[in-house]
Length: 393
Image (cartoon, rainbow, N blue to C red; front, side):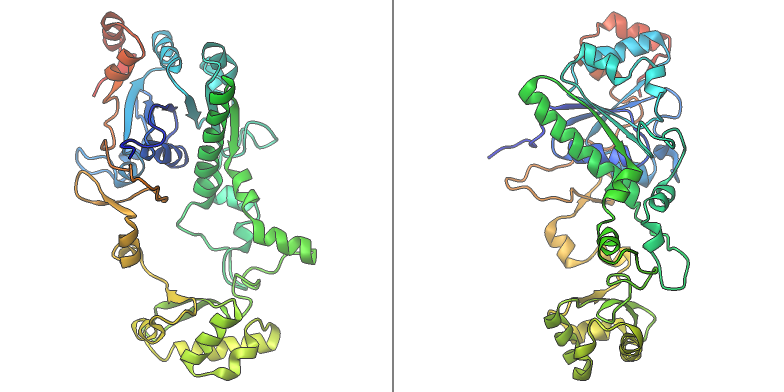
């Protein structure tokens, strides 16, 4: 039985900050890769200071940076840049999250690095990609979702676009495609000896996952008004319903068998034909269900549905989700070094290999260690420390 993760032996240099890049490399670190956070000698990863208290970095930083090491280095210093180049020679992949052109200005673009490490996989993760008229524009998750047509479809009918608190473009559009592209390119490099440049744009990723709306556009020649499509509240069988205690039920009874089960629980077999009804009939069926679900509390409805397969469940708070027996049984939570809950990897491999090997690193905690591994002499490392080209926590 293997005792190490499947990516053991691979080294990834992570020059990203905040959320999308660090989440990408968290996947890799949890799978056994040696992920080295390459931070500047100033603020480092800004996530450290977000709502931090005392000497402890922020909870946000701790959630996405376990199992990594940190090198704090001044890449504008020629000695610092040379030290990183020595480290690149030992690396399998590098990921950066700067605007296009920044790495080139540092002399660390892909064209330069591939000459010293031909099998290097170089991932550029940005808002709009390395090309196109918006390539140099700033943006955040809300902007990428806005351009991609996702935000337009999010929210209730006749209401404004709704803002979710899960960063879909950053994570689904950025972190996940970056990890997939990096792993695919590394497999290719193992076979051929040559790496690739992987260009990931979060806006592209958000657009590429807008599948259901694209389906509607191709089918109907237009998209439905926000809140009125099949999966956004346009039919009675799929949507959210308020309960008597002002909580909410999530109803996903799309298939006929689930809808029939739901109608049986609420005692309204007459609603069975109205599962996918729109227009006046659909509105009437929804009003009937709204009145029914408002007649009891969330807990009472969950008890009534019990083990009945009707695709009806709660709109849980995160606090409730943290103690959900299904998530606990799946092992989705792990304990951090301070005893707080963290999310474990969202994938379960046979022959379990995941464990928290390292707590999230202090800035520059492993600077000397990783440069020594890269072949730098004690004299060279001492010189870097003396002129503050690197920091050692």
